[in-house]
Amino acid sequence: MKALRLHRWNVTPREAARIQLRLRERLERNDRFAEIKTVAGADVALDLRRKRAIAGVIVYRFPEMVEIKRAWAERPFTFPYVPGLLSFREIPVLLKAFARLRNAPDLIFCDGHGYAHPRRFGIACHLGVLLDRPTIGCAKSILVGIVKEPSRQAGSWAPLVDGKTEEVIGAALRTREGVKPIYISQGHRISLESAIEFAHAAADGFRIPQPTRDADHFVEAVKRGEMKRLQRRTK
Image (cartoon, rainbow, N blue to C red; front, top):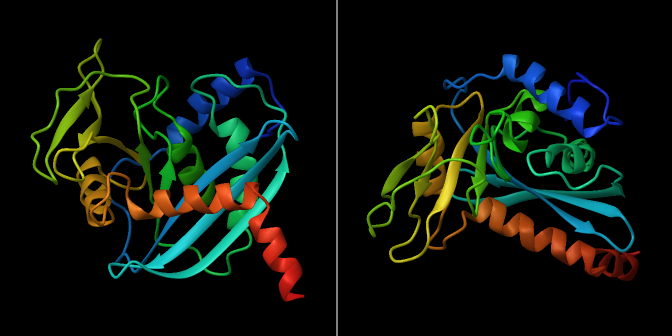
């Protein structure tokens, strides 16, 4: 799976913010996809001691949510922690993991925000534009915006709104009755309504949808060295 080369990664935080604003012009916020037959979850774990980033991608057959492929990669990271610039720390290693997939998934869930971002270009938007795939941002907390609590019923949602402009930038989605909502926003080539629908379909009774939940467990296992030990035992 190949990515577009639209900018350099060795940039300052100020340059990174300008890149986000420039690439935002490529963002598509309407549905542009055929039938969704495969979905993927993507996440990154950081090993701060070794200054290594570890990315994991798990692909499922949809709507059955049966795993069909997983891949991981690691590489050094040098970009500092700056709120709103997560993609410049994490996307380089994510692209390395996606490059190990022979077939591109039809839809990608990202652990992070998409359009619900100060510059309306979070990691889900950035990854979607570079891979030219539909993407959904699935976050555990709010980065920007205000929201009223959705009703307690699973599947209910409330709009996440920019407090200054009143623009709807995402949604608080209740994936399970009685648990905290998650925050869904568009990445690329998908409407907010479709993003909410797919996120709810992939929730499988837990607060965090299965694709990003499994990807999180996967990268943490790699970080602990479990995958490398397994590879050594099978050689």
